Length: 386
Image (cartoon, rainbow, N blue to C red; front, top):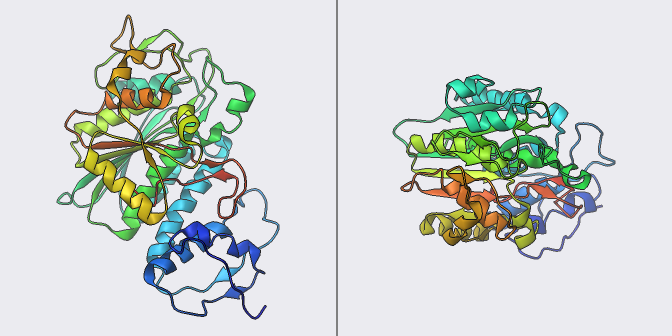
């Protein structure tokens, strides 16, 4: 082919260009005309998203078309962050358990000169992270809290927390087969937080960041935590376990409490937290919760600008009644399925200091079927907007 024309809907949406790498023959192309900077950025990111195929275990059936680009550092960093999420989520738990997730964080820390600390196994109890330990103790791979710190102390401090449940059987409240099939993706929140931290460090942004990833497997075993148990948390609140399949909020509550102790200017968490968010908003729209209207508005506006959409949901506090426990300070669930995504966010908010600016993104982290630029499997959502 001497050349090609591609049809584009929204010139600022990367996915408008994402069909091109596999629709065109596998040659190297260059742009035939100049375009404005924002459209070029979208094109570069979209081309990379469309060319992506997860190739760890098999080679793709064909190579994508290539695009020559100049001065593309910003777009390549954005693309690298999105593909980091996809690769981490797509990797099966055998090769992406808590120990491998730790290794990824260690490699990133070494590359960017960050400090890293890992608290694992029974050390979690000694260091007062009992909820993380309770969820992960039944696995043959020790639960852990991965802590990465980077940046100048004089810069604004941002804490990033990601749910790192590397596989979720549901615990003793065992998931059915179809519900368990894709639970390698239950560390999608951790993948987003890790990718965002790596992106900040790669761009050398004037921030000080703390990345916290509670990494566990929610396994079935003789010492698995049980429905009806009351577990301790770092914040000093007791939690009655209504359902062992609502484990993500349990590991996150210790990490959020620890982040809040450090009084960051901003606290963001990412989690594949609830199926209820998918029922409410479908697979493409992450559910955004925040205790700060300006923060929520900024993230929503960035989502519109970047064509990386998310949707704000309410922290409707009357729904606290769905988390009432008769014997503990709070339950991790309840008999009602009403407002499941909202009640999960309310649970998390309970462990965030009242004065702390905080936002929580409930992400699906997954494409159920192939679409241009969105191959079936792991997906970054709300990341470019963040």
